[in-house]
Image (spheres, rainbow, N blue to C red):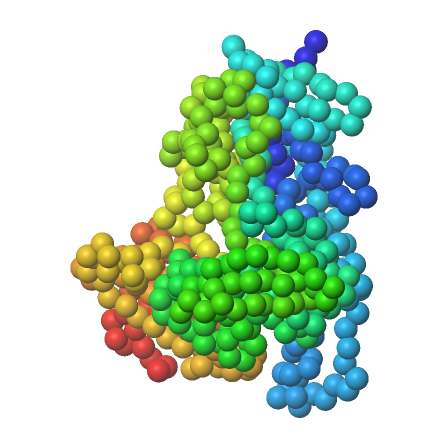
Length: 476
């Protein structure tokens, strides 16, 4: 007989494994299906994020930043370093060690919370009073039944039509995290989060990096002031050559690497020759092979599963979360949806405030924001006030030798309620948490201005930006 569960989660990335753990915590018999394999063929939990995304990329970012600090920044502290070099093999081994530790940690959490891990590819077979699914593993196909199903199958890199990704010369995010040698010339197609982060890693280690972006504007989703500052830094001391508004044509492998033909923003023919090429033009949802057609699960023309505000799909007792549904493809957004859905299934009142989801880019300097951008408020005709304060006036930032950037706060002109917070600077990924709390609880800029912030600390810039909304900054 088929094994029966209260909840079956398909996919064990951040959205899926968190949903499974929370469902099990709430007393529901829970299983999680995952087919991810490591290069040596072992099954692993964590999905793209932990295996070839968020976690390994941050490990390499940290390694490359330390190398650059040693070469170029220690002298300002009176520290002399001679004969500095890096061992790429050791960097990659460190990255892989962190990945293994994290994925093994999820397996431990599954065991602790009594979540059954089903190894293989999961798909819908049929419906009825319960959902019938099958898990295709190494040697057999197992039939299982579930009262509730949560689809969390994640996303994969979007590829250029007709361009083969071999993850050796032409790479997506997976190959870009595992170069066996430093390319002298690195090309990147796409100036989004992945392109900028991974391009920065290899630039710091010594590669000459050129980035081609189809859109006419840089970081269009960010606040215009943040994008302008990021452009200045990234194309200046950041050392990235970025071209906007291009149209990519033929991509060809050559003896010396890769050749990319493209048209510039002003219509001129141009060529990018590089030793390796990273293609980072977005991601697409993993809904193929899910068996949606067997049960009538609605999927839109872009491959996303259609859901309501609580992530309920078109079928009863079926939910979808994370990258396979509308909204930003952010790991923490998927995690929150996983908790919400598990709690709803258990009869509780789970929710996600999509207006308080932070965005982060782990570049140098970091970029983070939550809420509305200034251009969105202008387009909506909203009356607002703005306050901005630079890290250059902050003692802790100066002591860290990381004084670039600023924090900007947008507040309702009448109520002073915070509408958006935007940061570019060191530790922006950590500092934005205060803004997320403020927006979640409906705080005003005056609330942050009145809260005592430790001195000296980077967080004082948040307070000064809040004071600036009322034009009363104390230190600038």
